[in-house]
Length: 211
Image (tube, rainbow, N blue to C red; front, side):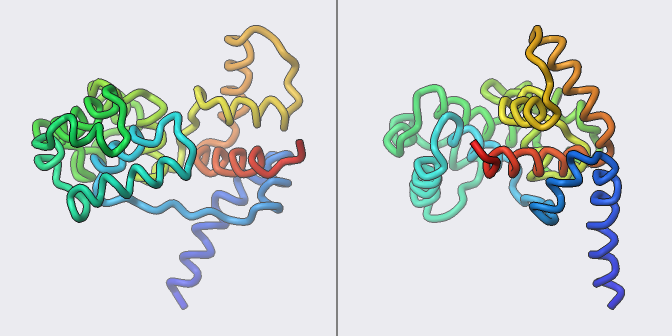
């Protein structure tokens, strides 16, 4: 019973806070609750993120499965580094993506990116730490913060889908990009410390909203 109340409180805290925004409150009513789930192997999360970039969900899923099949399971970072370049190209990765995936694996070996290391860093420090890896940008790291590290207060300002969702939901008038981004950022601040959940509602609403 105690566990049940902890779960209820977990959802109620961010729902209560985000519901102060009347526009977001409607989305919460439409889409229910979300729960973040930690990922165990963070270097693999980054590898999969790189593989899936600029691909449809279906194609990304196929390539990810080919990658796993290549090793008969999830590989260690050393296995990835030791894999011949052409062998990774053969599963459907571009030259750049092969290099980036191996860069991630090499970084894991040399510096590490497990939960014990990253838990000591705040969001901006995690971004600064991981974007040292060639092929890993701010957006990719923000997705890791949200969906692999369970950081609840991340707003991916450069995500085009989020930009479009906020512009439509809040009926922002077209203006210079910098001014528009400043406005979106200002709106997002009212959702702190639960901006990650706000992003999830905005993504869901954008995908399912009327055309």
